[in-house]
Every structure is written in C-alpha cells, then in structure tokens.
Image 1 (cartoon, rainbow, N blue to C red):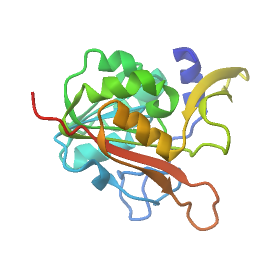
Image 2: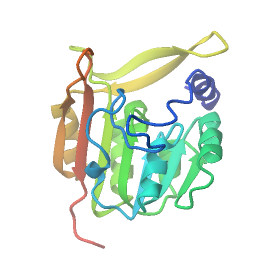
Image 3: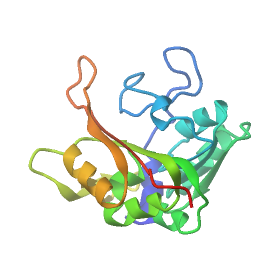
Image 4: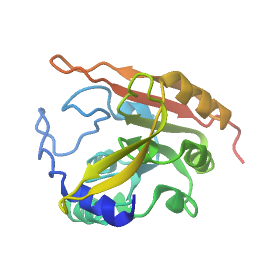
Length: 220
C-alpha cells in the first residue's frame, strides 16, 4: 500500500474523543475499545520511547505528559500533520512521517518500542522484529496490540481499505496466534515474552491481541 493510499485511509478516520471517561485529554489505550484494558504500565519506566504507527499521536502525547521523551512515526503524512498540530505544546514528543523500517534504519536507541494497531500489524515481522531489537536498549520493552487472527487464517493476509477517493487500496497484515508471535520474538532474541488476548468488554465479542517482550542481553 503506497504512502498516498495510507493518507487517503487516514482521512477516513475521525479525530477521536477529546477526553476519556476520567476527563483527561491524554491517556494510553492498547485496545480498540474506550477506557478498556491495561495502560502505560506495560512499558515499564522508559526514558525514551518510539511509537510505530502513531496515528493521531495520543498515546505518544500521554507518554510525554508523564516525562517520557517520545517519537511518534507514521507513514501517513496527514496523520503526522494532525499530531504535530494537536500536540505542539508538549515539549517531550516529536512526530515524523516515515515507514517504520526506513525510520529504524537510522534511529537512535529506545527504552521502549510499541505499536497499537500500527506497524507491527502491517509490516513483515521477519524484517521488523530484528530491526526493533537492534534499537532497544538492554532490558528495553517491545509491546504491540492488534486484532486477533481469524481462526484458520494465519500469516500474511491480503485486505482492502476504501478511502475518500472511493477506490479500494490493497494492504497486507500479519496475523498470528499468540504462541506463534512468542516463537518469532524468541527466535529474534527477545525474552520474557507474554502473548495473549485481552477479552472484549461487556457487549462486544472481539478481543485484542496483546504482546510484550524484552531485550535482555548485556549492555554493549
């Protein structure tokens, strides 16, 4: 899917809620449901964090408000511009328009890398996982969430999104069961892997796949 197609797709998404149920303008949410599931504690206590597929940047902005220097990266320029404008008053967060793999090619070290329905869902893990590993500090956390796979439909999936141009745009998503994600992460050097599904809230049927892992080698 081209960058232009991602921009078209991004324009179909609304701005989201201004505040959550507690009245806060920033918060961290791993699932597709409002005020549901775990929060920022899954990332530990990072000094620097990277959001791969940051969208409107709310998760990155929340990290900035609690003292974490955060970079949000998204391939959709329209989303990045929105995030830059919405959170321009925050000093500890920056946003960049880039493909996840391209950005990691010249990125600094991070204590936490995360993706909420973002690049970890739409990029070949055989390439992205080792690239993330190489940019995590020892002990650093990788965490990501996405929709769970459809039964018997695993691996790279073809799908389409329809943007404001009314045309279908092809995308690829990587859908694996939790155990397969765990094996892949361990194969690329990660440890302390936890992979499972956060149950849906009452009235909903689709849970959220949530995976966390660490880079636990010695400091260089």
